[in-house]
Length: 294
Length: 277
Image 1: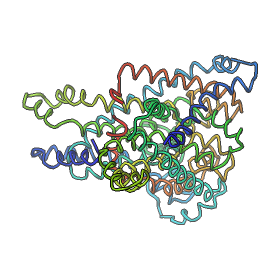
Image 2: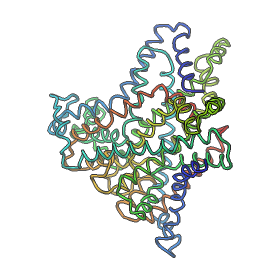
Image 3: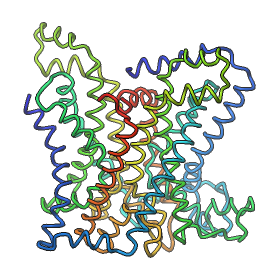
Image 4: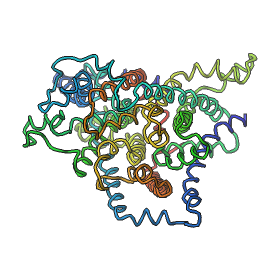
């Protein structure tokens, strides 16, 4: 089922189902409210914490709400002594963006090719893709580390870009494969009859059609790379090269942790990716149905 | 065209190459030492407790996650005003960095100034006015890490189940209703069996993710000395970072990888989550 039909069938069920008694609707709202509160709570604490002063956030009688709102934390946090936050943010952005682009550059032709043509080893290839999905950076970190040391690439962005791209490749290929496979082959043939080359067929005919799958793949890869932790922890040893996820752990266990800065930078790092994810919320259901579940 | 295949196979091949290198590294590094690293892994006195804790970690986190997700998905599948908002909110822990989510909880659990401690004192669950040092000893820190792990696993699981629920034809439910089945009964006998596909994939991916999870335990229990809150995964990183024994870490990685592989293989055999690929 494509994402479009999936979400359409949900909507149909949502609005045309038989009249639901008011009591039940209220009960559902109550359930929804409980879920809402539980899921928002940690991030509310985070946000409130980010506008408290250090004295407030470390006061022995902590207050649930900030007494006064110290927005200037969002300006002063960039020069906190624990870690070079500006550089951390830059490396997070660079690594995540480049990894996403690289993964797509490889995944799009691969997915198109496997969906369109039967070639020897096609099954083996797809099985390989699935297997790599099972592997995670954490298990392979020591191997990756040795390899990048051998190549003289450890502690570089390039190493993490390659790692992130590679580990997200499996999912990207898989989801795009199912989207390409759902496009009738006749469309390709028609395009080729009209004189379009192979590349033109891919870029001008197929890509617009798999756009939803592409967006899903982009967001997934980007968010995964943005939050990656295990491999970065080992491979990137210079403070300035580390992404935010690694840099932030340096605050833990310190005698005088500047929690307001931890939370400030967390909010800055979380909001954009959450918004991205929310944009594809509808497709998460459909995308998982096609890409993951099948 | 074969070029494309080559381009694709390369990164995938590098990965497979890495995983085989894992094994060879421990051999290459120590030369003739052979299995010495593996011997060190298994003879480490904390190894078996750590392995046991890893099992507890995976089973408890995945189990509770699935049960809670079934409930949440059930709520989110029904129509009510504000449902879209709730659905959006459920995504947050998925998109948000696990490290950052864990940090908030860690801060909240700090004695004296942590918000969660303050709350527990306020509602009378903790007697001492300064709260309790949850993150100061292994057992409680580990327990909280389990809670955080469940929390961050919920969105993916819930959404996978929602995807499963969306594929269930309404007719089957209506038929059950007509036949006089109670809501509980129709849930157990009509909905759950049809969720089998979605559920089994959700469980499988959760097992892999939770087993490989590092950041939560790293933040929660990382500053506790000793090995009383470690799983296989955090132990690998302790070998690399604290003891600089990359060779032993590699051996443990291989052990970990084999464990995952065995779990997944057994699981796929028994549950058959991918009927057609």
